[in-house]
Amino acid sequence: MTLSSQPGRGRFITFEGIDGAGKSTHLARFVELLRARLGVAGKGVVLTREPGGTPLGEKLRGLLLNEPMHADTEALLMFAARREHVAALIEPALARGDWVVSDRFADATFAYQGAGRGLDVCRLGLLERFALDGFAPDLTLLFDLDPRVAAERRAAARAADRFEAEDTAFFERVRAGYQARVAAAPERYLVIDAARAPAEVAADIEAAVGRLPGVVDAVAAGAPAAVDGAAALQAIAGDRSPEAASASVRS
Ligand SMILES: Nc1ncnc2c1ncn2[C@@H]1O[C@H](COP(=O)(O)OP(=O)(O)OP(=O)(O)O)[C@@H](O)[C@H]1O
Ligand SMILES: [Mg+2]
Image (cartoon, rainbow, N blue to C red; front, top):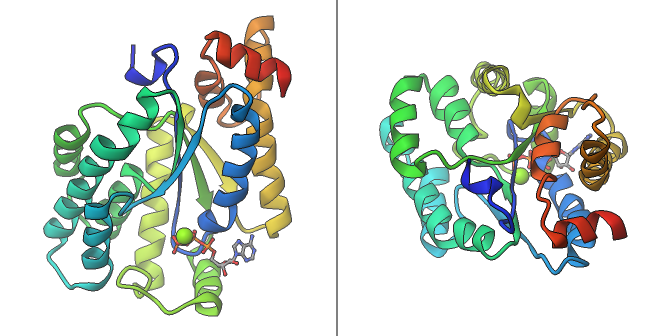
């Protein structure tokens, strides 16, 4: 049994995708909808980000986004910030029953430092085991987008940081890195076609949140899961505690 499947424990959801895919654009609404669903059950929703999420992690973020460094150093600092993030913020929130939504998590290191920078995935796996000891998100929303479209969106929106300044070939590799993660564990991901208009993407997000209690009902009725990511949604909505049951009935 994973930690996250313990009764009464919160759920951990991450947003992933290349820079400019639309994660931040849709996070706020996702969290707002989730709070409306879970609030009736007295559960909070914590919104956080990586690298960052803690005072130390935010300092490391400043270094990671701006200071030139060896790719190994970059990976080590990412996992150092992540270890602190889990210990100081994510784990305590989940333990008290709150849900946590993070703008990026470990998948980003496999995509950026692994596929993007070319670091060996097995070495990254060692760091992951050291830092996370099996801890992983219950559900990941992957915003999938052509890097050329993402670059146009970023150029219109803001100045580039150290990662955003990378070329299209880098982001092609990162995108492929994310897709490889999905292929290895498809039940954990909901892949979102981020090329569509914001309203269409938002409708997907809304549907995903709306399915949380709906999937509990489907599980109870023995109905098969029929959509991408449904297994993960089913898993995260599968807490049969009284609080979760009442949340599903009332929302
Ligand atoms: N579906 C969309 N269609 C067109 N523009 C979009 C869409 N989604 C987001 N944008 C715009 O693209 C830009 C980048 O979006 P956003 O900042 O949400 O990306 P991100 O995935 O959070 O990137 P980063 O990883 O760099 O933080 C913003 O200006 C946003 O308004
Ligand atoms: Mg963002």
